[in-house]
Length: 140
Image (tube, rainbow, N blue to C red; front, side, top):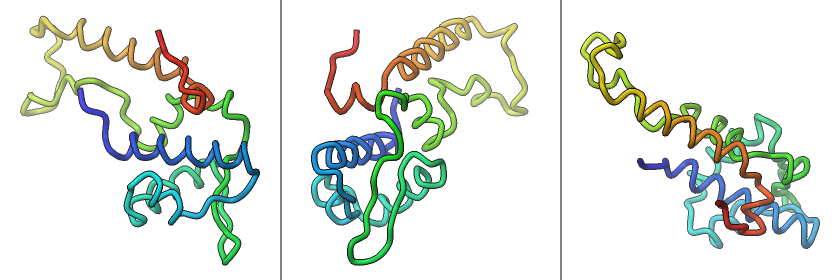
């Protein structure tokens, strides 16, 4: 399984923004995030636009502009962020190898495995909050 860079970079950027907001209660500039997290400004703009559109962060333009987190990190779960940034929380698209994209589940002997993995992934993402990532709590 491979998690997209959009998800990984988005979470890293959000953790950075949230940490800066918590410690200094200030707006964080995109160039600062880019430099600290080694993510291109152009890619960050796309990611932060999606997060802003979904009211996860707010942004202010201008010389004193930047981004800050909206809401409590304890109430923002990673599943929601995943949905915003990637929209498809699945290990495998069961129909990816069929020509007509119709389900062949009755012939497939592995669908129960993929379904269980999808459910486990979703559960872990729903149980994990942005605050957990900020505090780097170990997940069991």
